[in-house]
Length: 476
Image 1: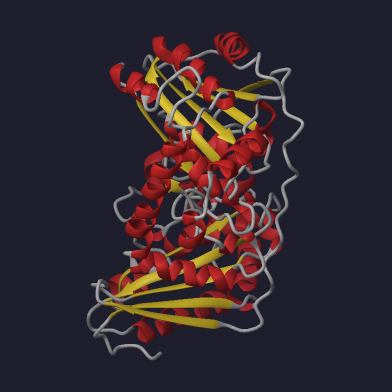
Image 2: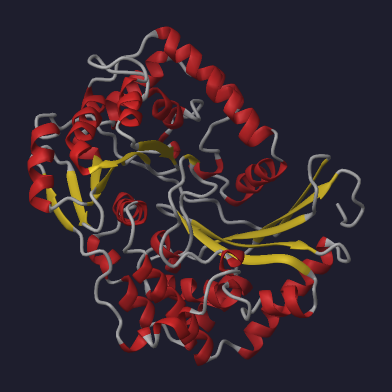
């Protein structure tokens, strides 16, 4: 189940707020200061939890799905509303439109003036934000329990009553254009990522950045926003997640009161996703920029189809990622960072989307080594893995880490709300989510070795070299 456990869908894919990564996330260096959960927690494999969040669900007559994750440790709640629309649904020539609409959702309704909802949240000591990714858009507020009804009232209001003045649209377009300049154009790593996506996801909407291309942003108009909003923002195209100090009975009453009267829409388009064109050869993209302080290396490959959804191979890929880069004794970090001192950092992660995904290796060389030397050292370790295979002990240790991560993911507000919402909005089910720990525990060394051979032996890749402008340490 790659979308849930193999990587943070929100990370670089998302724009703006980024709640914590999903359970089981394998991202290499994030494990630097992580304790040995296997020793701390005992043998979790002997007592695998058959559920994680224990969510309760119901659906309103208008199609709004509601999920409740109760945690009454503190009198605080989070409302997170997910819409099943993202940048991959932007019309051709209108890239960045989903993100533009997200910005404009804070500009007022027929009832509230621009910024008034945000002012109310701040006045009661709450926090809020929003995020746009390829396949979804989300809005959330964290407040004391007593203020949850107000949050639901006004979130429901902007689901159906967004009111925009032309000057607000024009002003926010300039804000987003500046955001792109600061977040993408002025960051060499982001520009390299866009160039790599253009190769890896050619023929798919996923090659277009979430924030959009500058020329498209400049041409976004109010009628584009209004049409997009009318098509996609509807209760039957949304999932409402409530987590924290709220029961399912309380949630049902509040949801009926504030969202129940909004009519379902018959205009929600069918979502289409063209699969990326298969790469015919490996590709290398070298980028030099005076802003780069240290060279870095990244290699991405499309995820094999059998690892995209809930097949056993998807869970084995998660275990493989942990074996490769989680902890000081992992297959990449121990030899390259600690023993050979070729790398300052090294890691592996995977991301999945509706009908495609990718696996990425990345690292930074030490000053004494070039990018080519780092890449060669990584390939040596991959060859060793493929030759020798993973051990049962490595698989069990990875499973213990991942199961501990699932247990700790129950705590807090953001993590459960984001994980549950992300799972459902991406086309999975509550059953997929709750069975994750069991499915991870069922992964065998043999299956991990099969997955490693598929990922590392059979897939074409695109490699990125990012270098200081005056660095001569890598060929072009």
